[in-house]
Image 1 (cartoon, rainbow, N blue to C red):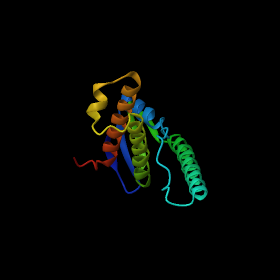
Image 2 (image 1 turned 180 degrees about the vertical axis):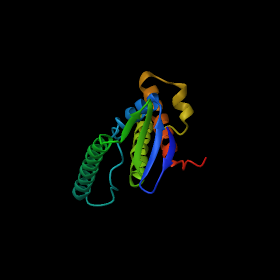
Image 3 (image 1 turned 60 degrees about the vertical axis):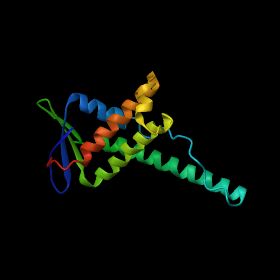
Image 4 (image 1 turned 90 degrees about the vertical axis):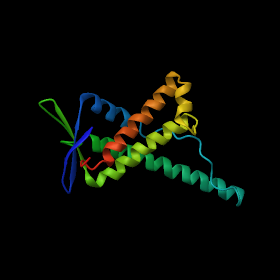
Length: 155
């Protein structure tokens, strides 16, 4: 995925067929299943803490569902992905760049958590299984697309 031009409103990227398949594969994993996270601090009243924790979980789940719906709608927008003479182009609104970076980051962090949150990725590489290999692969391609979105095209 390579930035080919941009203006005040859009960024245009050239993608290979493989890039496009990887882009859709990565984004298709959003929202990534959340790892069990610690609850709200336990230094308060028991029942109210549990209620607050459930409210937080519910709000986060609702936000992930909305973002997933928005992402699917965004991907289906007319002229989002065009193919002219074998040249695949992806059009991203400047205002959506940060949003996409966050989605890709959520995918990377979700995969990392499912790997057991290793301090060093080399630890995960040394004992690859079919599942952990898929998770490492997903982390790597999400990171690749994050890098592409962060570049300004002058490099």
